[in-house]
Image 1 (cartoon, rainbow, N blue to C red):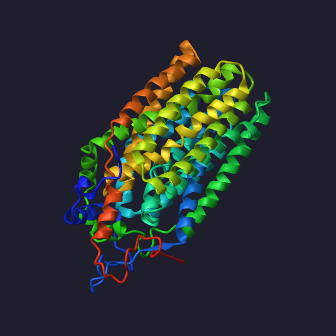
Image 2 (cartoon, rainbow, N blue to C red):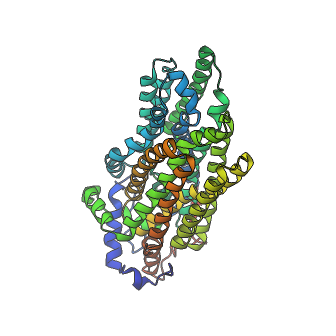
Image 3 (cartoon, rainbow, N blue to C red):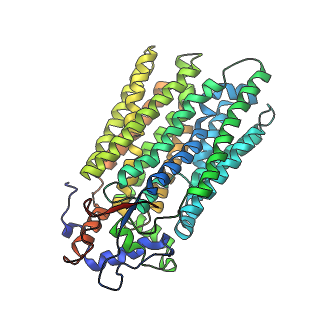
Length: 493
């Protein structure tokens, strides 16, 4: 189905657009200097692109990096932490799965808080919790203190709830309609870069030595580095991170600022989203894809060590290859979406290629050639993690004018549920039947997800709402088409 619908296909008339814009404003309490869509002289509110938007998105990307790094820092050297804390492999797996489990019940209150208090409060809460978690880990470097290190990881997992669903929201609040997908990709880029560093650094900083005192020293060094970075980023957020620009970046955002926040119902928004059939299909298909990614990342050390004993460092490098390739894929997909707006076609193509990449990776893992595994893992990562921003942006299109934080939260909640199921399921299958059977288990669900993605009806509401808003402007307006690259202004803040 062609995604470039006519306006009639979207069923958005001017009255609908006004109502939708009001719904989107649930997170948009008045700020000093805000204007209504008309300034009293029949002129629409001006839109501006501020240079500060790049600072905001890169700062978010940085503290997202710091948090996601911690997700895998135990699992990628799981055999070493098993020896140090004298715990089983399944216990170490929970240092990763706690990130998934914590997210599921807390995403709804955190999204409600986002809608009521805005981006800055969420950013402060996320970076504060992340900072606290890192310092708890510093105090946990003793073989009988696994409970303390797990508490630190739990705090970091709480921080993730305030971080993971934010890229599309920041992109929408700060960026123009021609760059939202690129901005969202940059936000996701930080999360992926953190995972990449999480795969790379722990095997280097914590070598597999037999002396427990020396091992403790290496672990503490790793934890101190993380705590220092987290503290620095928390301070930056306090002084630099801004709620939103004084003037909106798009006409849709300008309209969204007109509604008092008390008129917005978060529960009603959730119910509307769950009645949106294309979005429900995307929720499940997104969860299947990202859940497979979480399982592969969590169990990568076990899969590689099982076939290539003593290769902890290379296991980390393979994980790094997966994520770095995915970051390249994310940026390419974001730029592609901004230029073509072919959301469904791109999402489906990347999903199918993820399935193909998983099949090839599975077939080559047992061949005894580590360099081949690097290549096939990289191809898998390019599509599997490159899919992440596609899901966010496709959801924002399908669910406009609902809050991007709400739609992203539901996507991530699905990913965490499937992540736990797949990690436990694949782990048990690997233990009983081997790595090949475990990977085939994931391939089956990626096939199901590909089919479901193909069934999604493409309804690009956000794109069509922006187009309709432009067409409704008075032709003699002195402001003109404010979303046009030739008119919209970029100013310093």
